Length: 584
Ligand SMILES: Nc1ncnc2c1ncn2[C@@H]1O[C@H](COP(=O)(O)OP(=O)(O)OP(=O)(O)O)[C@@H](O)[C@H]1O
Image 1 (cartoon, helix red, strand yellow):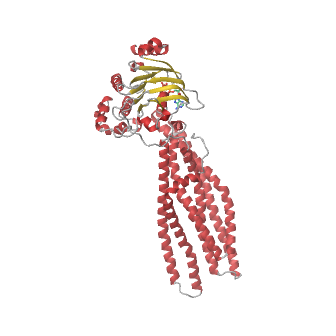
Image 2: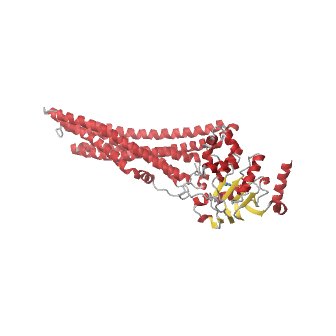
Image 3: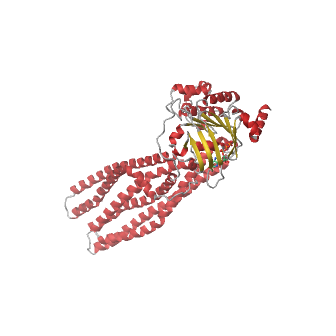
């Protein structure tokens, strides 16, 4: 994935803290419950010591037995409650991260989307955020509770016998050195595994988005190989991370076994010399056993954090992509709102610093109302005009103004609410026909919907479908024909009552009858709205109020069809070729 590291990002743990902070009280409650659970367990060896001492001195043991039973029950009950509270909090942290990330990705600038893989971004929202669950519970809480329990246990051990404590700590220090070597390897492997999941997501999105083309090109096997390679890379790296995590866990386990044996040997010698009693040694050994759990917890927390940190870094990368400011949606133009006037003044633009200029000083003015058509060879920069009007990109120099105000001075939602835009490939989203039509104006009433369905000649289709407007159109509207998709896209734009309507090759896939009807509709709309049309087929725009002829990023002529046929050789040639083709 090509998310570039554009700026220095704060440490991953800061981001984690940001997600965790709103849930601090729940987390603290869970951690406290875990601690109390740990403390109840911590008392067990002491009660056991008392029981043994009582036994060896022929005293009653009923009290100690009852206390031990109560502690065991309390331990289980509090432990269960604590783990529920923690798990719930961890899920809330994941939810918070997913919400924040999905809101952010919806606001991404188109420039950022251009250089990202949607599948990889999806993986960051779905897969990487999932890893925060373990980081929250295992790492944060594990480190907190495990660390505290560890300190408390060490203090208790020190109270029981400082010499044996020294022996134990020496063994633990040795294990710590080994862990220092292992832990960074877990981080690296985890990062690579998550990156591979991102690559897989990107490949899947690419393939499923064009499955018909993949099949028609007989490319299934090659694409399958790409997917498998990404899956295998993720597997390889996850296995590597698992290997190092297991090594870390085992190092901790081994250290405890060594500590146990050493304590047994040194403690046995101390019992033999009479330095300590048997009860003290037994209590200390129980503490050594007891140490196992917090140590495993702390080591688990550290290793788990490496996976989480890798995921956090990927989330941070997504959050560092350029985005549009968060703003409230703006109201749509009221019925009968004044149409907009538009002007480009010496606009220079390129899609990236390392790409050639697409517009080399484009200037034209479009008054309010009427139809303006943009024609010219492929790649001339016509669609780019529309992208700049929508502020998907900003020009490098020059000014674009709407109603005499530079676009940069417009609040983005307000600017876009004034515009209806039908993209070149007329995208239709999965969902019902109704969902698609209402996408740009969810508050449109049934009358407006019926009217727009009629004017875009979708009424025949709606009547034919058993479920009418509720019919599901499939992924990207695959259950509709190309022409139907275009009409849905036009209807969607019209429902917004735009003050400026942008139609990019919006009728290219319609049959002659539908195209003529839609042309009449657009002409009708242009009486009350400013309409801009990009068209390859000149036949669709001969009646436009003005035609802007673009070539290689420049406006070479502006006029009516009649004026341009007489005055502009390129337009005359385009017209001649196309009308010849039509006649032939
Ligand atoms: N997102 C993008 N990133 C980089 N370059 C782009 C991008 N979109 C378009 N271009 C390039 O900008 C140039 C102009 O593209 P544009 O789509 O504006 O042309 P057009 O006149 O609408 O062409 P057509 O008639 O074929 O639709 C083309 O050379 C194209 O390759």
